[in-house]
Length: 160
Figure 1 (spheres, helix red, strand yellow):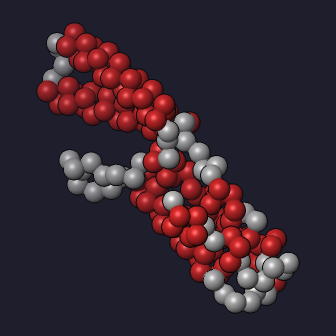
Figure 2 (cartoon, helix red, strand yellow):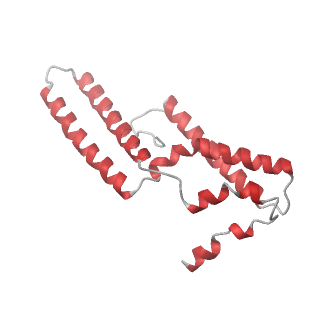
């Protein structure tokens, strides 16, 4: 998850890994697009395009929960609400815990709700849309058509 709790003194190991993965993802797609802007491409540059695109697809799942559709978001919100009610009932029924144990239980419950919600959002998310699909064909098209202007979506976007 690409966020840090305000209550945390520092990042956890898992959060650091997620942040590094996000940076690798953005680095690879940026390098990919910068290489496509060249006027001419060698075989080595085309192999770099393949490498950067592969790295992007290997790491882009870190952003999947941002790509969830409305239905997945509704389901995640409903599951979150139901689980919160269940956990609140359990916490209310447990009376013999110390304050520190109650705080730990609340923290574990919050983490469980977040993980479940992220899992649902990731299951309902995808990267299957034209711009992402189009870039998968760049490296094969460069030897045939040296300039990639035909793949520009700017014209359609300005008309939209």
